Amino acid sequence: MDKKKIAIVFGTRPEAIKMAPVILELNKQSKEYTTLVIVSAQHREMLDQVLDVFSIRPDFDMDIMKKNQTLSDITSDILKGIESIFLDEKPDMVLVHGDTTTSFAAALAAYYHQIPIGHVEAGLRTYDKYFPFPEEANRQLIDTLTDLFFVPTEMTKANLLNEGKDEHKISVTGNTVIDAIHYTKESNTRHSSLDLMNDSPDQKWILLTMHRRENHGQPMQHVFEAINAITEKHKNVSVLMPVHLSPIVQAMANELLGDRDRIHLVEPLEVDVFHQVISKAYMVLTDSGGLQEEAPALDVPVLVLRDKTERPEGLEAGTLKVIGTEKDNVIYAVNELLVDTELYLKMSKAVNPYGDGLASSRIIKEITKYFEE
Ligand code: UD1
Ligand code: UDP
Image (cartoon, rainbow, N blue to C red; front, side, top):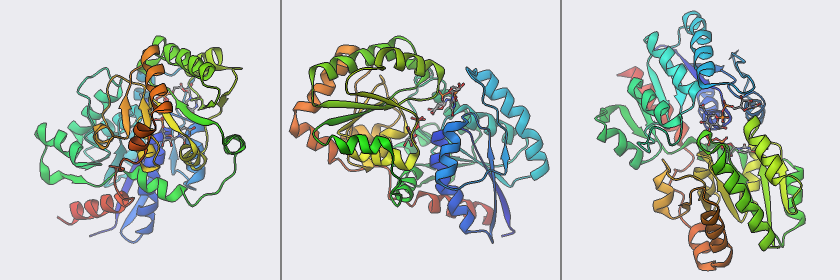
């Protein structure tokens, strides 16, 4: 095989965390591959935090982030900006991840230039185009354009087969987030949030994150009201919330959760610190996608603040519960986990369904096979 140039395009925090292990693995094979890292910077600070932890220096940085950016802003800025990079660099393959608008726009641009597309974390589905919005449509659209599907589990492979995708193009690799956890567990970075948790070992810590577009407004308000009710009732419960930098989330978190006893709002944490925080938490309360995969690997139960999940593996394994965003339902589910020790042990001991930390090397083997065929 001639040496191939692989462009890896991403723009947000979760994509960066899950693509970093693939980049590090590709870099190890520098005789076979040139790695071209292109970031849209759909996120700025939250992306840079991840690049620092993994010591990744992008070859191209499109720096598109704007305050209150719309989906159309992101899509059009990337489509326009990436064209000249693809024309100048002529990559042999473009790798995109998951379901963000960066991934969709980059896949569309690659398609326009007839560059083969590899989709990492392909095949996740809720089959409801507004939940999560716009991620469900993004991933279906990307999979329409994809040449190589890297799926995390057999369940995600089944989704693609049911849609009539060619089995030959699908490989079950595990999720690269487990590879990322193997990397971050070597870190012993100290942080004031870790000190806070260590200094009150008698407290049961709830790790809270929330940011999804479909939860902006009332759903988020109801969850935050529930959090206040829970901490008022249980004096042995503390909450740590690293607040997403979205102005909408910042405003609501500060208004409803700011200056409350035992509720700590902090800046987004570096991922190596964040993984340590998950391990110390009693439970995770979140609408995040990635956290539904990480927490099972770190033996921490997750209550999912959504009506549906595209990650049924965690439900089947027993580590997740989908509880929605109604105030009373959130209070009930959290109370249950606080008082029912048997349920708690069952959830925290459930087996991680997302792989063994070798997903990135499997992905690269499949890419090599593709070029050798
Ligand atoms: C995006 C993804 C979502 C993913 C999430 C991860 C899309 C449509 N959505 O949503 O799938 O779950 O990232 O966090 O691709 N901001 C900053 N600094 C940062 C990051 C964000 O200031 O480092 C602020 C900006 O004002 C920005 C806003 O957050 O306009 C929202 O960011 P955006 O990427 O549009 O949406 P997310 O909700 O982060
Ligand atoms: N994360 C982080 N610092 C934080 C909060 C989250 O590094 O303060 C990481 C977390 O470990 C996970 C990813 O960010 O890997 C999840 O990102 P997010 O919830 O923003 O997006 P989603 O996974 O929902 O797309």
